[in-house]
Length: 214
Image 1 (cartoon, rainbow, N blue to C red):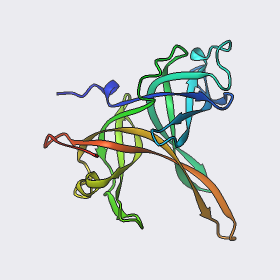
Image 2: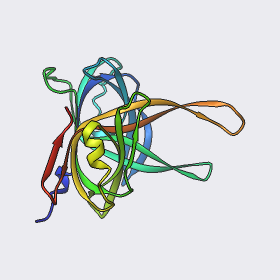
Image 3: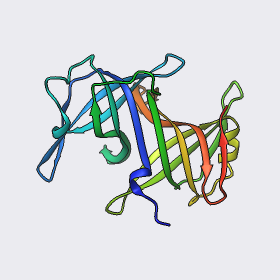
Image 4: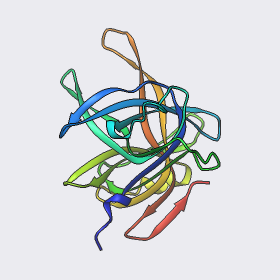
């Protein structure tokens, strides 16, 4: 059975606009812009996430810093070449935007159906919590794929450590931002931000196995 690519990659965000939109690129005569949205976790931690939107969806009368919005779309990835090195960049690509909000909904929901494209990396934090890093290749139209880093916790992490390249999995979770420091060759410290999917549910589709992270 052929998978519906529209269902492979779904994200819903509810949050606050925290930057103005700026020009990103043009494709087939259509201009696209980027901005940042702030969304809260249950722990009250704040995630600041990058968004890409078509000029057709921007209502200049409603789009203002501080406005509450709901976004429905997909997570997209692209390579940004900096100093002759490829850097994977993630963004939320807007399919629909609304200023009429249901604030009782989960503010950050992600569903992905894709393929493990690198061997998972399993580790433990200094406090003993289990983590696995998985890079997921998610197909979309025109034979393109998005490469989306996922972080898996707890007993799901140990399960994910047994996954192999090529395994088809479905995950549910949220998109999050993570600040970190990178030490440069000259000793300077560079502040950077990574974006990833924090996984709450993992399903291996071929085996129909399903786990939830409690």
